[in-house]
Length: 83
Image (cartoon, rainbow, N blue to C red; front, side, top):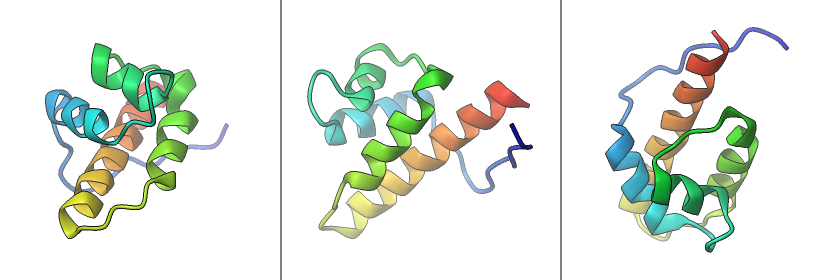
């Protein structure tokens, strides 16, 4: 696996990430639901988290910003797990 670059910008807290994931999850079997309910990050689920975020279509600027922040949070956790 190649080197993973550290994400830049503000990283939201785990609690805020769980709130956003709870707002946007795709149902009780989704990766975001799992994270929202446990607040546990599993690197093996990284692609599932990111794909689920990418599949969302927020209709507001707040929604877009929340999902961007959530994506950055998971990118940071992925970087942290693989540095």
